[in-house]
Amino acid sequence: MAKDKTIYTCTECGGISPKWLGKCPHCNAWNTLLESLAESASPVKNRFASLAKASEVTVLSDIEATDMARTPTGHEELDRVLGGGIVEGGVVLIGGDPGIGKSTLLLQALDSLQRAGQDTLYVTGEESGAQVALRSRRLGLEGSQVKVLAEIQLEKILATLDLTRPAIAVIDSIQTVYSDQLTSAPGSVAQVRECAAHLTRAAKASGVCIVLVGHVTKEGALAGPRVLEHMVDTVLYFEGDTHSSFRLVRAIKNRFGAVNEIGVFAMTEKGLKGVSNPSAIFLSQHSEPVPGSCVMVTLEGTRPLLVEIQALVDSGGPSPRRLSVGLDRDRLAMLLAVLHRHAGVACMDQDVFVNAVGGVRISEPAADLAVMLAITSSLRGRALPKGFIAFGEVGLAGEVRPAPRGQERLREAAKLGFSVAVVPKANAPKKPIEGLSIHPVERIEQAMEVVRSLA
Image 1 (cartoon, one colour):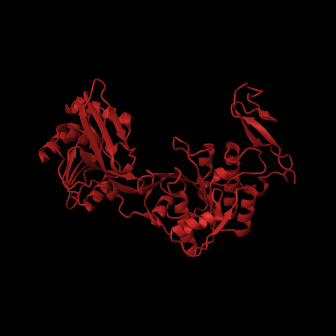
Image 2 (cartoon, one colour):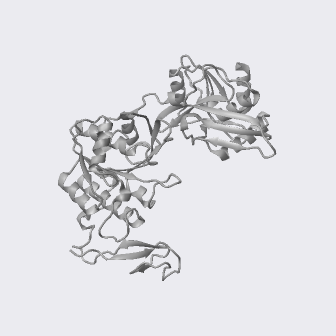
Image 3 (cartoon, one colour):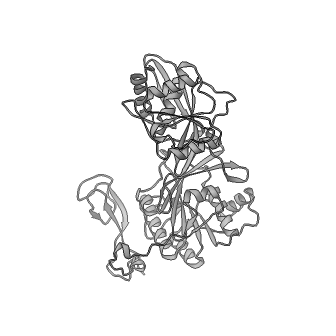
């Protein structure tokens, strides 16, 4: 069968050129021509023909909806992020910095699935089979029966998948795979898009769960075209400092589970191990309360996490600095203005540094109240009471707005031994929570008064 013809399509006007040019001959835009394949006129040669099934228009209520069966991977934290386990025919894209543990975690998961009776395949395009075997022995996976294929040609990988029909296959990584139908180098936009599309269609047609490992750019985004994230069912990101032993796996997109769910792992000599109580990572290690520290309860997917917010206020020069790590810097400037106008706490001549302990990133506005209390505590040199927590969004008018699922946050805090909570009035529970004294507030001024009365 003859190969499909390579053409170049302009991303601006959609014009087609038979060869690559620096400038589009139709709209004169520079560097907009991308390599693609021309559609064959014959239906026999159409590479999508095998998946073109006849379908009829159906009323939504007449369609039988069934839950997708999930197979646990043997790693509770990974299953949490995936929504309960791997799904038949699902496609997962996982990205992260080099050396953060992507290949390690996936090899451990494949070994657990293999020992549970599932057929697995590990396709490596960056390492040899001997290197993968060496890593498995280093991880303590003695006698592992995981099948390994060292290959980067798409057509050979698809043929192997069709022949072996594993329950799950890992492609490490998608940037190393290339197709003979394209002349561009592996890792180019055209190759990544085309190879990912073929693998996705193969997963849907055969029922094989495929996990694609993706490289990331210097900015931390997945390398390649953005359409890559649209093709797949689940997108996972590895987060965390490579100098720290803790890793976070966050679900950015998940058609089979909750979005923004996280799994917490600790890197050990035997690979990645799930952390059963992740709040302990982000909490204070001080024996006694110190100024500038306030604990809040944040939500990561369906899991409430207790995180320590630290603030340091120090005398600054004519241009004081505002620096935040793990929190939005622009929101910090807004909170300082609200603190000055409505609570009378002035920091205009002070350097303000705010940090979320443990390397966690907090994007929800429920951290506002804890940040403002930590800043005030550091400025006045007075520590907050022992066993104190706070959460709530603060508006520009000084009002304290409720946070979603406040009851779950409070129960998690009480379970970990916290005894005093300052929360939005709308989050105050109707029934008291044992061991937890709750102080509901409506404005930031009231929160400051409560803290002063408790000190």
